[in-house]
Length: 153
View 1 (cartoon, rainbow, N blue to C red):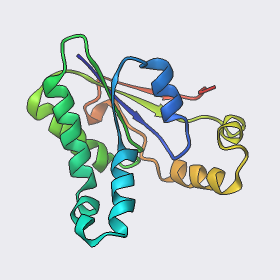
View 2 (cartoon, rainbow, N blue to C red):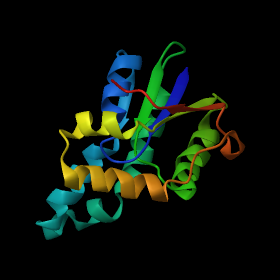
View 3 (cartoon, helix red, strand yellow):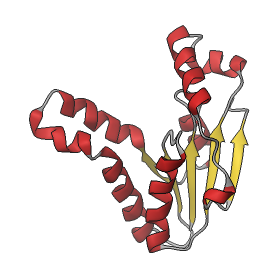
């Protein structure tokens, strides 16, 4: 089994990279849980989903690992800008498997970002903001490898 975290700022190419590099993988996309959170904002009955979105993403990841086969690739696509967030998922994985976890961090340059965002100023600003607060992943966190991906397109 192969487990990969695909991380990085908003609009940095996580989806493009995942589709290109892991076309056959089982993908857990944090956006699914963000959509639930957005729905919950307008529905009081769904408040619990909004409050527990990271927990649900974690459970989806663990479920995929438990049911995955030896040749399975599982990708967690999530910004994971903060070390604390990555640790939350890594600790859960280590509870059920000793399978190594790789990390790919999307860090395209400004020209690629202009192309990825259609040169949309607000999206470029969001990317730049998140890039500035990114706590760069490191093998000392428990990853088998960490790759900075500078070229997405």
